[in-house]
Image (cartoon, rainbow, N blue to C red; front, side):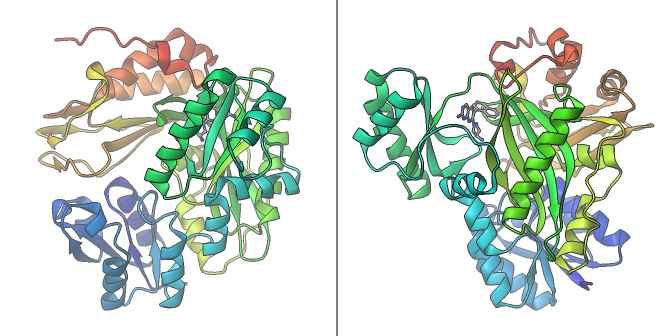
Length: 449
Ligand code: MV4
């Protein structure tokens, strides 16, 4: 087992990883930018190394600074958390070269799934259903128009280097194809230095349902059931839950088997998420695979009673998994609390938290690095807390969430708490009949004074 893990991240996830390390007797090293000197991950780690100024490019995203911190502290592994270095194959390779274990899949697996066309081809070979579309890279505009005509409009143009909603354009009729094609290519070139595109049939208002998978170094792969992440706004998830109110037992089994097939086909190692789009006929299609721990891993932990970070560390250390699939015993919902003003288009609201009280009680979990007096820096993402409520049924979990949201006090900055309160009262949310279009016509109403 590792003796010392460096956590190449900040905020709640750095804290989350430190907590597990403490429980299993592994020393921790925090790294931080000068903007995070007063952060809890710095205080709770056994050691901490300042790696640079606030700009992420010169701190959390700089491989040389992170590696230097790992070497001077003698860390034998690096946990990247999510974001930053988590899906950076080059960084995983640098770790390998320095004989420091990157806690995650191999650089090749990260690369394979990071390139969306390669990922899709891999899934087709493995027999996992994918959205009908072009096979491989689109050669030129003419070929694109041809394929779009064949599959029928509307279609969606996607960048092979994209993902998570970046580098996509919907085309509803042939007359618009050329313009959208060149805009999409320009955007992809600017964002990813790679303008490779592919086409898919556009599925209107799908549900976003993802399966947690876990694989070890011996070829065992299992799934830990699904999370429903359909409540999103501009590709930012707001609420996640497990199990999905949309899945039947039969569909869960089928999708779970597809997710395991996906993982086995690449001998996947570590924690991974297989994202599916599910249409109104309950047909499901592989979308993307994420090769990291996700923000919403917590709801899975709650419903199957499993420490996913512990599992991730054990797998990296070469300990085998049992290979059995897990099914939810409970219902868990996560509300992401962001320092944003939901009454003003979710605009960022960084600043000092002047008063803070977190909810608690049975079935209430708060994963947060926030405290009274904490200064939320403007440089990083705006999530300051995850409120996770777990009960036997969805109805009870929602009731508990309302109670917990009512106890949550955060003063000094605007937060998304009022949004979540309104959502928990929403009829459509309560019925479980919603899709990824939900936020387009959700009305939060007037701010209470
Ligand atoms: C799609 C789609 C409809 N049809 N692909 C958005 C995130 C990225 N993972 C892919 N996304 C989509 N791909 C086809 N062929 C609709 C979306 C999409 C979406 C997907 C999941 C959750 C929220 C979404 C919001 C808008 C669009």
